[in-house]
Length: 174
Image (tube, rainbow, N blue to C red; front, side, top):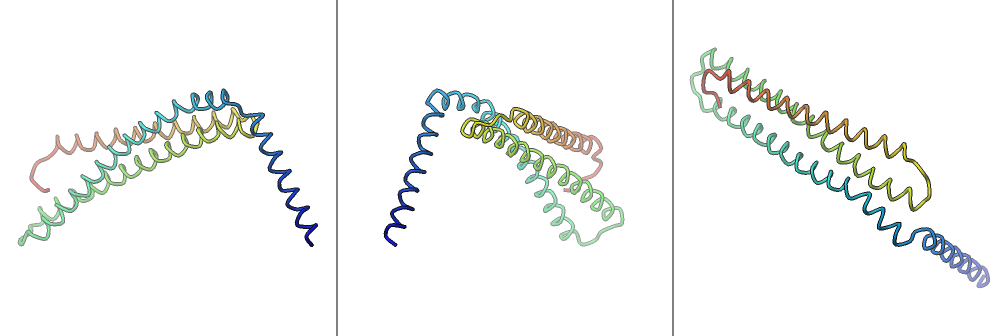
């Protein structure tokens, strides 16, 4: 029984030593440095995406605040004419449309960040495990850029909705 344990323990140590030699022999300091240099641009892109997501969530927060104001206005108004009821309904539908649009922009912005993070991970994994998947990295990056474009188009749409509302505003409903 003790010999079996020693044998397993020896195999484990041999495997560990072999794995350490493979990693140490194949990944030198220059390789790590070049991997870090390759990943710097995507990391800056991640920082930019984080800034955009901050802007998107701020917009969403403001829209939610406006819905809350609208609810308060509706509850505080004792006598509501049909005109006021219709205005409140249209305003709520408009704000709901903006919320959906902004949520989609946030979704695609977050998806962009996730895809860029996968690009960075893949850059390191290709070096550590010696597999060349340039196409995989390229596809991930292209998908990230498409997601970013969709997110920005949705944000632009949100800006147009807001501008259109301001230009067409006829009466005060919060």
